[in-house]
Length: 65
Image: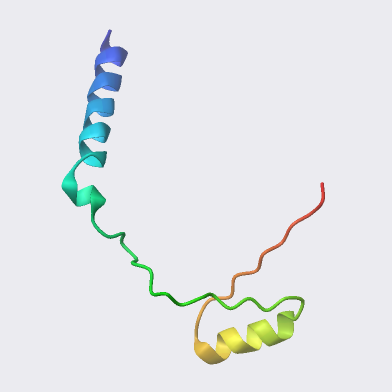
């Protein structure tokens, strides 16, 4: 019974938070319209550009398996 009440209270709090007008406002990081540049298959160039601009480098990897 205690678990049920705790779960119900948590669900109610989450629902109230998500349905509040404040939740519908702009996100924490509003879109700037700037497109992220991707540099394919040139790690050295991407690393050099990230260091020059002083920004983090995002490396995307994948595998067919």
